[in-house]
Length: 132
Image (cartoon, rainbow, N blue to C red):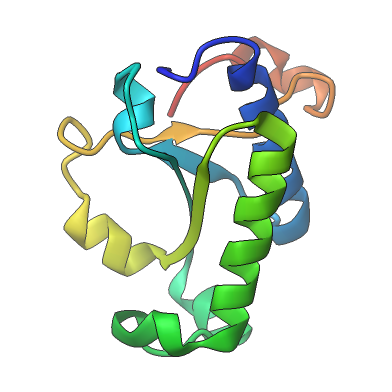
């Protein structure tokens, strides 16, 4: 992870808050995952199609016109910046679309955030530091 310490710890804490709110993890993607120089820190929450529809986000190609999506992205970007000190670019994506566009995980790696050992069940502690 290119964000360094202790920002990496805070980034996981932020991911834990997103996981708490949405019931699933978010992912660090983009240049901050692999490089020490980056413009912003891309964090993505991938919702399955059913949850995407349930949330009322609508057409992913016109997502910037959905007020709920915009509000959530702005709010979680601000929370992430406050918690980590990093320029967080938080976005919610429809998983089926994101998985089509970014299917090649060698070109587009993802690292699961929020696996904070203090919050994980004891059975998961051995996997708490592993990336997905």
